Image (tube, rainbow, N blue to C red; front, top):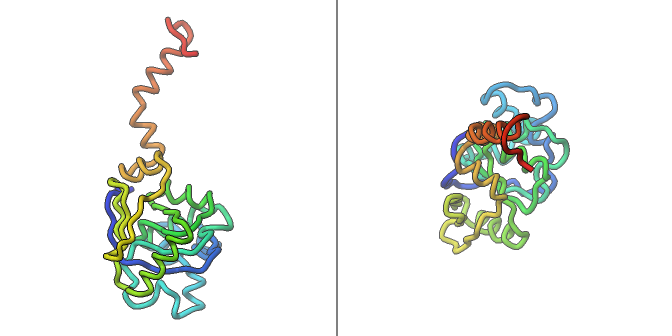
Amino acid sequence: MSPFTVVTSRVVPLLAANIDTDQIVPAQYVNAQGKEALASALFFNRRASDPGFVLDRAGMRGRCILLAGANFGCGSSREAAAWALDAYGFRALIAPSFNDTFWSNCTKNGLLPLTVSGELHARICAAVAAEDDIEITIDLVRDRVTVGATGIEFVPEIEPFARDLLVRGIGELDYLLDRSAAIDAYEARRAPGSRRREP
């Protein structure tokens, strides 16, 4: 995973509530392999049925922050939803709420899901509606999010362990492997016949 330090991008607005994982990546594509296939699977059915779907509008390609509606990622627990968003190029999602499993899948795959209050979400939506080219900067190192020159600024709310992994660009397995020497020493102290046993 790429470290998530500072990301600045224009926004893709997808503001409907209750966008579920079957919309994000339809069931027929959950076994897609490789970034190109996963990126193509993202919102495949929505894009096929709606020529004006937001991802296909002019100027949207390359934007890496998705401004979503409430309860984004509800439905099934399919991790492919996070894979497809990542493969398409998204780095962060901003919404009033996320499904818990989806939130966890995102953080484990290098995506930052930022939960904001309803009032703050409404202010961000209004700013994006007023200025399509407005950029949001997410500085996870300094714990600061700014929305263009609007004066909207806030601290990103993210669980500290998930934040640490995102900033470092590592997964949970890498985190454990970094501590393998300490784990080995702990296990050695617990081994039968060792002088000192941990409580």
